[in-house]
Image 1 (cartoon, rainbow, N blue to C red):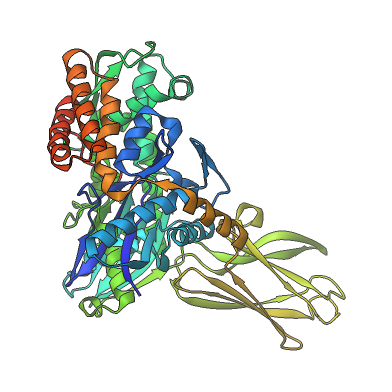
Image 2: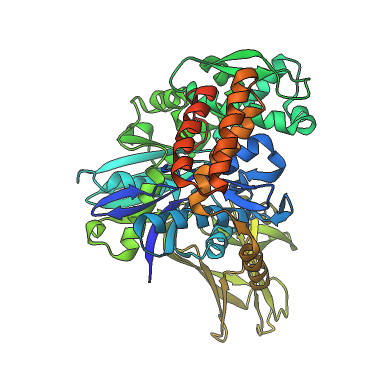
Length: 582
């Protein structure tokens, strides 16, 4: 069989967890860390690396590395990395494969399935793409779980029995979600969710960097096009600075000579928390409408909320915490680490799936992220116009759910009806996401409005939509199970992707730490000079020789020495967050 684990597949960092006893335990990766950067790189030898080592490649050879691909899930895009061509699903599957290997090493058992979290506001195509990524990684998806729901599960596992209303404020590396959850006697009911799929900590970092470059008459897009390696190195420094601004009012960013051929130290620029706010005033303003939308759909006010749970590394920013405190009149709850609470909650759901007795008294419900409906026509004084959206299952309806509507023909003698299925909130279907078409044939040729179908939409916990149409005149049934949807790979595409994945040369898990230190060393070698550069070259050469000669004791000692020296060169700031820069 194999074990089922919980996975937080994040935009910038991912994590895995499993319930042991009655406690969610985070799975360490090969470097002993519980957060793995959602970054995929390819070495000069064509080996695929994931995590910290790939992150270091991004700072020296951005053309051989990809990140933030979670934002492209569900899109028909492809990235060229070295000699490889990888889709967002394939890139995500490599991260999932690494997390699976970490979990198997940690548990000493095979991992066959997973509960994988997604932003609450992920649409149908994005959820399907996530399932495909898991299949490519050899994982059976037991449940796709909304990230705020997972956070509430982690919080509710050991909460008291008193009734509480939570607002989960999830600002991660690339997405923003708000969910309102009612907790009572071990039952967690999601009342409403709202969010944005393209708002997160990466945007805050980018705006801060753009602001500083603009003060030096430099354009960030132009710098990225003209000097991609320098821009990548600089962006890494601004991530560290943004993280530092969560605990101190100012931070220092080493600034190179932007016109020099190599990284040439020119000094440092001081960035402040106030400057971070000013650079991101427009992004901060987007937090309020989403928060109010979730409250409005739950028919609650800020005074009705007992606790606000901050989730995601970007929620650590001072301005975000102050926004939440001002809106709700109290400080947010801080019992669980914002970076890992989603993974912990995914592990709780995985334990529920596996029938673990430690969590059997816990029940969680979830809601529809978007409205589901169909296209209908309207009669304007005898002129029939199509393109209008008829909602059938409204957003924030508790799932699983089934809804029925009756539709009639629009033309005399009509013998066929095409039921166009859409997801979205707009009045016109062209602004919504088209999911599929169910063709209903054998209609009786009657005057318009005198023949029709009874249409049933059924949406289950795994995000599978079934559409049934029954002819009102004959009772004949038509059914469409919407699994082949936008964003989902066809059987041919899936076989092709699996074949391509099997051909990849993936770096062994036990070499991750060595690969990371060597990549980091190469990056810092280009940034330092003089005796520091000489000593670094000496350590890197000795370490590489020990690895080639398989002198394990010598390699272990040199690894520790190299790690210490690299930390001294860069200064403290190597710890990661789920946001990657909060």
